[in-house]
Length: 439
Image 1 (cartoon, one colour):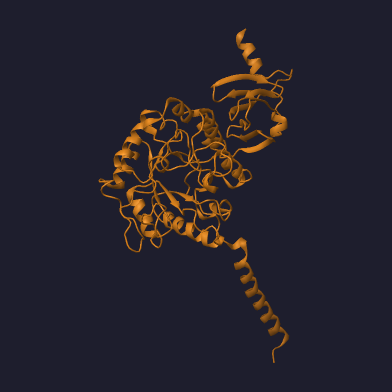
Image 2 (image 1 turned 30 degrees about the horizontal axis):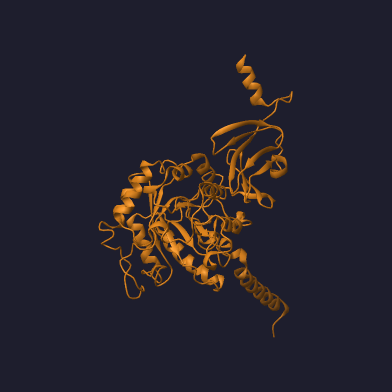
């Protein structure tokens, strides 16, 4: 017979076991989000695929690094030089081939290129994928993640684009998470920090869980085309600039220092001439708008054009340090769409110094007059504010009323606004100081 005291003890023991079981199944007991401490601002640089495809080699990479130094891109913030698919020696399944560098394309190996980049204040990226083969049919990393991570680290690599080729569209999220978790864990086990890019088409709501696996940036949609606003989707797959922009609305909260929504590579300078990317190109105004938008939404900005041959306008667009600074702002905020008037949209975000970046976008076919009000659009109590045009590099003065300007078709006007403190008599402190110094 079991007495009441024994029954009570047994019940308490069973309750404790049940509580442990429930706790282990609870989401609160899951591992905390991991971080490798990298990519505190979005990666900015160059990627080889959109212009060269798999026809890459050591000379192209060296010339690209040299060109980015000579044309001012490095000094504007473009430090990543990333090899895409095609650096590998073998085509075919990993079960049949080792993962090795192509000795004809890269006779001195990847380590040589990494050293070449590092000595010049830049970083080198490389490419692989979670399958037996990569998108272009080269040997992949499936089943060899730890081995490959050690190899990449030994070469001095700084960034890994891990490309699933838009596979696993209907796969459970758990399967997708396992793919990227395995490589993330392998990279984090190395002494060398390597930025991890989960190149996936945005399926499985990757933005909800990728940061928790230690991924630094992840694609939110399918591949971009070299178009600003193509009707529908080319080949029922590609997203144009405005498609990508719309895809990101509502995803802002998932991005921040160390983990970013990736809107795909920059198409500035491709001019419809890419052999790898569909699209007929965009106008100078549209490319500049595309660049401005990527900066505002804090997407990684990797140029896909041949930077050795950029035309002056494209180079001027890419090296606008005031626009790049919006992307690299240490606060890591992502622009929200704060107003939507059909074809006329306003995006804004707060910057680390307390100022705000504001973008006025005209998606329509004709020039339009657009107005911005800090109080109405930002809910910010700015009685007086200064405004600077970041494309004209010009201060436009101080305002105590909404700001109004013309915006051309497919243009984005980008401004930086600062609240001005006011003195007791109602004048702005800056105005009073200027008048006092003039006496």
